Amino acid sequence: MFLSIFLVGFTLACIPTDNSVPILPEETTTTTTTTTPTPEPVLSCPEGWTKFDRTPTPWCMRVALGATTQSTALVTCQALNSAAVISGFQNQNEITTMIAAAQQQGAVPATNLIVGAERKSECDSGITAECTTLTSFYWTDGYTSGTDGFQWLSEQPDGGQFVVILVGSGLMDDGDGVKTRGGVVCGMKAQYL
Image (cartoon, rainbow, N blue to C red):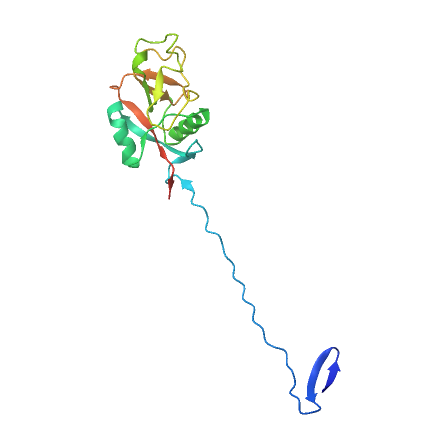
């Protein structure tokens, strides 16, 4: 048995009244473990590239200004990133964004940029019922699909093998691969950086 003196709910002393040992509260320690989930890796673009959400994978694009021909355009893109190719346009948003990027870099309205599209061999004879303005060309980058990105100048395409986009209008023209152009639109798959 114990004789306890209480003051406002607190025990001041605990004195045994017989030979028993006082029972004191046990000390307890609580340990809390917090697990923070590892963030999922995110597909991103290197600095200076613009990311576009495409299916099945995000796509990075960048304009490279400077004297370029069809035969040197791929080398120009790969100088920016070894994984880069000459890019096509999936939609109007990509066109608008890349034209704005070219203008921010100082491209004048008359600047033509090489685009990753070529005339289909079966459409060499020009526009026909099977080879329309939307179906005469194919995207060469391996990741652009559909025809929404083909936005032609009036009365184009008219027989050229390759495609350029005019910075002033954001519209496309077909031409030969020999003429020197003002730059190239480059693209690549987004990467885990």
